[in-house]
Structures are given as C-alpha cells and as structure tokens.
Image 1 (tube, rainbow, N blue to C red):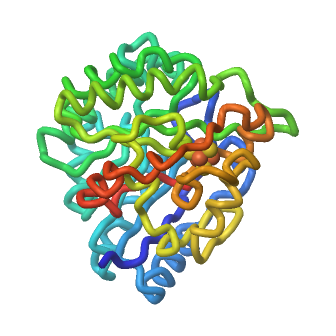
Image 2 (cartoon, protein in one colour; image 1 turned 135 degrees about the vertical axis):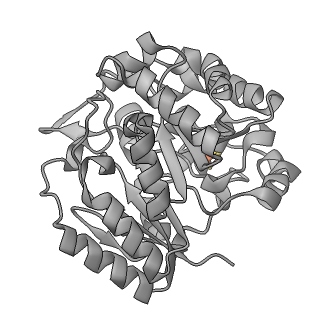
Image 3 (tube, rainbow, N blue to C red; image 1 turned 180 degrees about the vertical axis):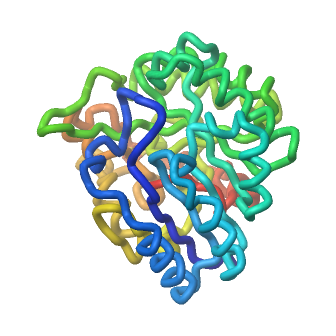
Length: 322
Ligand code: SF4
C-alpha cells in the first residue's frame, strides 16, 4: 500500500523557453519563500505523505533544492522526485550532490529525436546536448528515471524515432503527455498544439516501438479510444489520485481525484463508452478549443485484459504533475 504523495512547486522560473509551456498561465504568481515550501513539506508528512515531488518550473534553479531534499529525507520521505528539463543533470557534480542529498527519482522532459527538433521546442540551443548528457549520467548511476515527452506539432511525427534516441541514451521508461493548452494574457497559445487525430497514430507507433525495445511506455491525458488495447493502462489509469495532494503557487488541493475530473471532463459522447469510469480523457482546455468529435466510445474492449496486465506492474510512484 502506497503512502500519500505531496506535490510542491518551488518556482515557475525556467532556464528553457518552451512555446507550449504548460505553466505559462501561472508564471505571474510569486515564487514561494523557502520557509513556505518547508512548511508544506512538514504539513505533508503530518498528513501521511511519504512521497514528495518537486514540480516544474525548473527547481534546479533554486539553490535550496539540495537542502530541502536532504531535510525531507530526514523527515521520512522515502521517495523524492524531481521534475526537470534535465539540463542541469549534464553537470555530474551537481547530479551527484542531488543523489547524495536523497533525490530518488528523476522525471526528465525530453522533446526531440535530434538536436534540431529538441532545441526548437525547448527554445534554447544546446538543450538537447545537455539533457542527453543528463540522461546518460542518470543511466550510468542506475538512478530511477522516467522521461516525459510533451506531444506538440513540432515533434508528433518524430515520436517513434524519439523512442530510439531515448533507448540509445539508456532510458527504460517513457511517457507521452498530451499538452494542456494554456491562456496567456487572455489568449490561447495554439501555435504549438496538434490535434489528437493527427498525433495519436504516431503515439501508438512509438508505444509499439518502446515495447519492441523492452522499454515501458505510457501516456498522460490521451483518451483511451485513441490507444491500442495493450496501451490502455499505466499510471494515468491505474493510480489512486485521491492520495495525491498539491501545494502550488496559486492553489492547494487535498486530493487530486476530484480535480482530475474537472480538468479532464467526460464528453457527452463518452456516455455510452465502456471505459468512461477509468478513462483519463483529455484536458478541458483542449475540449473547449477543439470540441470532442475525436472521442469515440469504446465497446467492451475498453476494459480488456491488457489493463489488468499493466496493473500488475503499474507504478504508483512516478507520475507527472497534474
Ligand atoms: S469515448 Fe470518452 S470515455 Fe471513452 S475512451 Fe474516448 S474519451 Fe475515454
């Protein structure tokens, strides 16, 4: 039985400049003081949390990350996870200090199969080389690692090739995240986005490629009707999100279970779908922008044996941020 999980945000600053940035809509909120973050971490332990996740922005930009990690381990957090663009992990001395402090898991964003694609999405030349070095360093140390890939217009056709790149870097687990549309200054940022129908054939191909290479492949916020039966599992479906609590720069959530249904509602067309109780659907913002015609109710196959198979090995420790 897993303990509770606390997700905290140390900053909304970042050393990358992704056009699709999914926290651009909260970047105007002030960064919490380290004392405030520590108070949340202590409160989380009192609530029974044994897992801690430092959410994006780029927490490695805050020098207090090391001391907070060290103190959190002493307080009893057994699992401490860092969401990062991976660029600071290119510096082996820094990575070793994180590991020594007690960081146990790394959730690294990665964007492209080659530098031209990755750096164009990241917005910073050299990001691909740095993140690639970071992943190699993690693999060499045997550190726990999940790579999350935001699916956007610029990379959606390259996802199968991206799996090959990650395999070559020693990555064993990849998750394709459907990108949440955001509004900045009252306007939707739609340029980087791609439609489900255009991208999900490449997601399915990438997941099959990962399987063939012996990697674990999953998705986040991809409707189950867009996935092959064998891919309708993973943490996004099987995790108990009522055990997740959030201390963000703009809100606190005692349980993510209810929030998920608000942020990813069922559509009218989901009514007759056999998977409606477990389906993560996709972002309300996407549904508002593009409608729900791409949701196709499943018959009995929605709860195939494949879910049970994945459930037997499904992880509850390494999800991405809400
Ligand atoms: S129809 Fe709706 S509930 Fe069914 S798989 Fe598609 S998005 Fe999910």
